[in-house]
Image (spheres, rainbow, N blue to C red):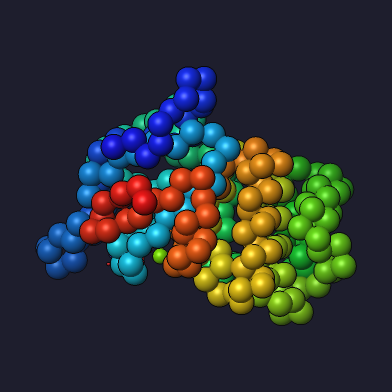
Length: 234
Ligand code: ADP
Ligand code: MG
């Protein structure tokens, strides 16, 4: 099933063919993802909804190369993720993608700017360049006034803006966000969704987000729905 009609000349960003994943416990196999196939072209905001336990996070983890599929083909920008070496996957995680979590996953003892600069330090960028870039993206998410604050000194919405800054500081091509507004009030949720839309429109990043919010789940360029380990367009 193709999730979207591909116009000629548009680049394929995510392409899944017959992807399966199951977990085993005490020799009982639990199928989680069941023959998933879809394709997403570039610069799209993609939403994914579905009941708890339907496999949304598992799919996101597979796309983020945190987990691997049991079978099927996963292509990101034409590169087969299933055949990539561990070294290539590390580069993929560090350079190609950015990840945003529901509960932020910020380092509690680091300031906003240090949290945002961290992926650049890990990539070997010098301290001064990393700090300058972190400052630029914190400004982009309207947090100039919070750059020296630690997570406990910030609201949930501000923490999520720091996470988004951290996810885009290395100029990724793709952002995966697992319920990024799941822990936020409606006003903060709107700010986060506006920011993610700007990532797509202004920065050309593709965003793939999981949500439980019906309104957000209908607001994407492509809105997917997951049920019984299968994906359907809505
Ligand atoms: P969702 O994000 O849609 O709520 P998940 O992808 O987190 O769903 O989980 C889908 C199913 O897979 C759930 O039944 C969950 O218990 C199971 N599951 C997820 N991760 C594991 C794991 N590491 N080991 C065994 N079962 C798992
Ligand atoms: Mg989940």
